[in-house]
Each structure stands twice: as structure tokens, then as C-alpha cells.
Length: 95
Length: 170
Image 1: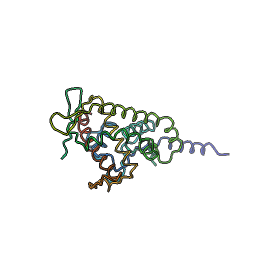
Image 2: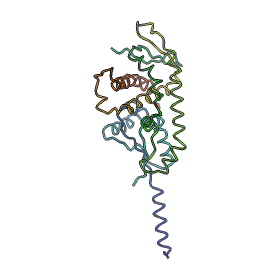
Image 3: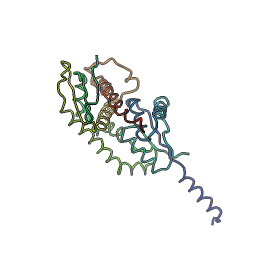
């Protein structure tokens, strides 16, 4: 039978996993216009144009950009928003 | 020579002017293109899952979110297709057409035009290299699709520009 200390460690590990932030990633595609992607980042996240363009260029040049990190519910909201604008967005839990 | 422009027409309307036969072809092709949204490849592109490997979350998303997004896309498309019935001769130039639509439909136009481009791109397996090619054989369906992606992209640039003029206050 495990002692209380072991149980405590397991619970801590579980809590830590639940607390890991979720990353919202936008992937490149050959069709979406750079200006359109910039506009979407400004609208969805409220980013100023310079920051929106920086993420857009990262998507274009590196194939993906981490555009936001935080709680799961908010990440789902942002992915929903990005999908509504037809961007290729996914969420993944930070490792 | 491209004459296309999108400009405000008073406080409540936008007007697309300089619609030449090539642009008109792409606009009038929108209904048939958008009808293809449920082809598997187009559907996967327009309605992707939210994670790469979380099957439970993906399944929940497809059950609860995907139908709403599809409805959003269909509604935007229907708005634009209704607006398209207003195409009329451009009084300033022979062989050109114009179209006036409510400014409040701008987001529907952004959505529908982008949907059409993505559907064409997905169904014709368009790559970055294809997008750099400007030599079209219009007897080839794939080249016609590429031309329409470019023409609709040109229109979309104007729609983004007009829309973006409101974003600087964010």
C-alpha cells in the first residue's frame, strides 16, 4: 500500500499536468493572403499591427507560429475564432 | 489591365467597380465553388479539428463546434450570393460592371471569398509553387481554378484593406 507521501507526489504531478498552459498554434497554408492573416490576428487577439505582422511572417516563413498561450478554455475560444476565419489553427498543451 | 476597385459608397454601402469579364466570371462562379464545401478535402480544410492528437477533444469539437462553424460559413455565402444579384453595368466604362452592397455585409464577403479560394486550393491541390505561377491554360480546369484563386485574392486584398481601416483603433 503506498504511503501518504507517495500519494501526495502523484496528486502534485496530476495538478501540474492540469496547470500546463495550452498553446494556440497557427499553421501555414498556400492560399491565405498575408494581409488577411494579419487582419485576423488583429481582430481575434487585439494585437497591434506590428505584432500581428510578426506572427503572420513567422507562419509564412517557419510554417507555424505560437500566437497565444494560456488556459484551456480561452485557448478553445481562440481556436474557434481562428477557425471561423478559416485559418489552420490548433491547440496543444505545453510540455 | 485590372480596373477592379472597392470603395465606400456613402456611409452604409461599399461598391465594387471595374468588374471586367474575368472578374465577373470568378464572382459568378462563387455559387458553384461554395457548393463544393462538403467535398471531403474541402470540408477537412474549412472545418479542421482543434488538436493533432487529442481524440476526445477532437470528437467533442466535431459534435459541438463544427456544425456552428459550417452554419456560419453557409450564412456568409448566402449573404454574398444574394448581393451578387445586384451586379449592373458600370456607367463609367463599357464592358465593365459594378456592384453595390451593404457595408455590414463586409465580413460575409471576407468569409465567402476566402472560403471559395480555400475550396479551390484544396480540391486542386494547389501549392506555394503553383501560386507563384501566372501562366494559365484556361482550357485546363486546374489552371482555371488557379486563375480564380488569384482574381478572388485580388478582390480579397481590397476587402481586407477596407476592413483593416477599422482595425487600427484596436
